[in-house]
Image (cartoon, rainbow, N blue to C red; front, side, top):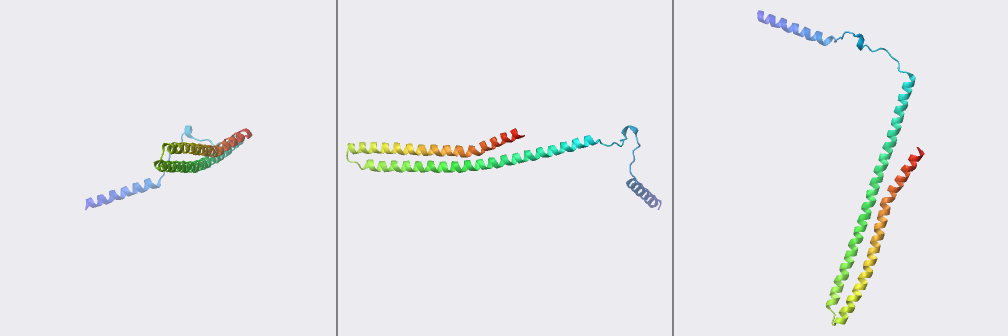
Amino acid sequence: MTDTTNATKTAAKTRATKAKAATSTVTFPEFEAFAMPNMEVPAALREATEKGLENAREAYDKVKTAAEGATDLMEDTFETSRQGVVEFNHKAVDAAKSNADATFGFIKDIMSVKTLTEAIELQSSFARQQFDVLSTQTKEMQELATKLGTDVSAPVKEAVEKSFKDLKVN
């Protein structure tokens, strides 16, 4: 019975110690070296800090707006470039098909000639036609490539000019 009584007393003592530790707060002795004096921030410093925060917010807004504008510009430029390249590729495929069709037609015609003179005339005629067609196709492809370059670079050029104007104003 004494073991049970001692165990009960010990348990009660432990609970009391834990409860006392939980309810009491740890207090540190007050050292003069660590004491914080009550200070008031001067109005000039407060105003300067607020002005600095306001300037930082304005600068952030400008940077954010510029970044969003640059992102939109890049998206538009990539889309314009993609559309131009697709159009250019279609034009190239059409030209290749036209040239292949003309070549197969020439081969069919050359196989049905009866004399060497007809073959030479047919060859000369085909060469002149293909030279004219190739010149036209090259000119069209060059114009399309120039248009694509202009369409892609125009928005970038405008954005750069606008940025320089904005810098000169500020």
